[in-house]
Each structure stands twice: as structure tokens, then as C-alpha cells.
Length: 298
Image: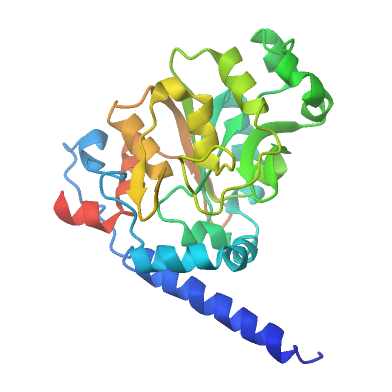
């Protein structure tokens, strides 16, 4: 194998060191699990104080470092370490998709990607399930003008709307569900036509590497979802220089009854090829265990 140019090798070492610093500052303390919570403690009580009130686990210096090196982190975040465990479970994936309805929100636990290891929380990416042509027709949404440019893509299987590197896009299940665990939420009493129109209007909007929820000219995944469902009043978390949105904060808000979504289901797969539907309590514990500050104060 030819030797790497010295400059390229140095850049890779620098990026690795920067990632390690962010990981240690934000995720290194997430090793102690709290599975011995009393059985009479409700899921809402388990996640009390999480996750936007607790603030982002990365200190100011780490956020400043990330801002100054956004392009290097962007390249790092594109690295996929392995296939997601859900890819080995077609039955579980089919069961999940069979339970979804147009405009459901799905969040992903992505330990198979570097981005999933650097972003704090149990759930580090999100998308909106647009639905199949048949589902959209049954819901009275297929005729919407906002879908006109994208109907062929939807027919071809691009049925999830997400904000990713490269911009807001439609993606098929085999890409979006290349993950380890999925939680699905259903918005309550929302105008699905209006939500869908708002989402499709953002197609192609660039990705926001600063995760700034106050700037709609660039979008990250949770920000796109918040823009699609403004009536949900999804909470923001103040971090140095901006406000952001913690996905675990959305899930915690649903479990506590503070946000207008219903839980559709929570499915996780394992490295051994197994998969199972998890309980509401399991979901609450998984969220809480990723926020040590909350675990220590509750």
C-alpha cells in the first residue's frame, strides 16, 4: 500500500483528535446505566428534566472548536462504521413501515455512524415519513401541488424526508433505516397537508453544520421537523452562540405529555441479528441513560 502524503496524514490525525475531544467532552461519561429504577416510577418521571433543560453536554470550548472546523467535522460525520443492525432484520423493518402513516416522525439511534457517536443523546437523526403513493392517496394528500415535482421519486420508493449533508432530500427506506434503533411518533391534530407542504418547500435547503435552530436558510434534521410542525412548539436548547434542538428532548417531551405526539413504537436490533419492540419504559430509560446530568439529579 502506498504511503499517505504527510499533509493528508496530518489532516486525518487532526480530525481524529478533534473527534476524540468532542467525544470525551460529551459522551465519555455515558457509561453508567440506570436500569434499576423502581417499577412504580413512570416513564414521564424517568425522563423528568431531560433533555433540553439539562443543556448540551459539550462545553463551550468544544463547540467553538467544532464551529472553527465545520468542514473537517462534516467529512468525519459522513463516515459509516458498519451497516446498521436493522439492515439484518427485514421483518422488523417491514413491521415498522407497516405501522407508519404519512407525516409520522421517526428518530434513529445511529451507533453505526460517526455522526451518531458525536451528537449527544440516544437519538441523533430524524426524518419525516412521507408515505407511499397509496397511503398519500388514501389520506387525500397525493394531489397537493407541493408533491408534483416529486411524485415519480415517491413512486420509486423515496418516502422519507430528511435534512442531511447535501441538503433536504427524499430518501428510500433502505438508506434511512440503515440504523440500529427507531422510535416513531405521530403528531396529534395536525394539518397534514400544511405540514407536508412546508416540508416539501424546503427541498434542497443546505445542511446546517452549526445546528442553529434560529436560521432557516440552513437546516438540520430536528430543525426541519420543527418547521413542519410549528404548532408543536418544539423546545430549543441554548448553547454558546445559538439555540439548537435536542432530539432526545422531543422524545422526553412526548413521554411527559408536554409535546403533541403519540408514540407509535420503538424497535431496536442487535449485533447478533435479533430485533424486538421495546416498551415505553425501555424508551424512557434509554433516553435518560444518555444524559448523565439528569440521571444524577433525579
